Image (cartoon, rainbow, N blue to C red):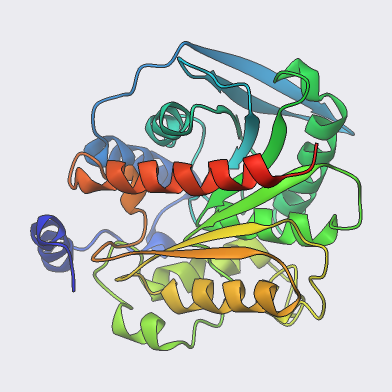
Length: 312
């Protein structure tokens, strides 16, 4: 059942839907996404420091932003990949969320401004995630205290990118204590019950997401490639322990539940969390539904559990 605080918002979106993304240029789409993020966010959480940094990877540099919270426990560094349907989102659209997560977990966050489609199509963002994780692991003390644990995290499209990157690197000694996947999208097909029940009017429209997958994949047609549809991975043995957070009223809910089950099938420790009454993207909606902050606090408890249990 939809949270009462979200009902007016969902009704307004249904009555006055945003333009279909196919009608907008990439620049206009991103501008609209920024405006939407600003309209939904709550009060900005204060943190001890925010530092813009550059990650120098092979053949390219990516902008990133390091958040250090007050009362930093020096227990973990979280590398964060934002959502935005692979085509939108940046360090600013998810600034409020990263501040709140850093404060709530008392962990440092490194948000990454990875390459977006359609200018940089599949597998550019996957390559960015793999290379960023390797880079941070190799230069860990540039960002966090020695002895801290490494967590990789993403929301929506960012969660998908992280899921793939951790699967591809699972045999490498990167020291990843956990992967945190927040309402991930797990392929362009979207044929689950939740994708039908919540297909339209709940912030994330399935038709629009399919269009964005087209922008992201370009000429790539093989949807069975597990880098496109992570539910197609034939083996996930050795992947990092996972926290999968899904929203009850999200078309992607069932996919997230299925991926948690797939990880568990291959012996990966998994904690599946469901936010009752919430819609896709709710963690960035504290201005509309303050209870989102409580879910951040609960998520922090689960993240600390993996950090405490991870081998040194």
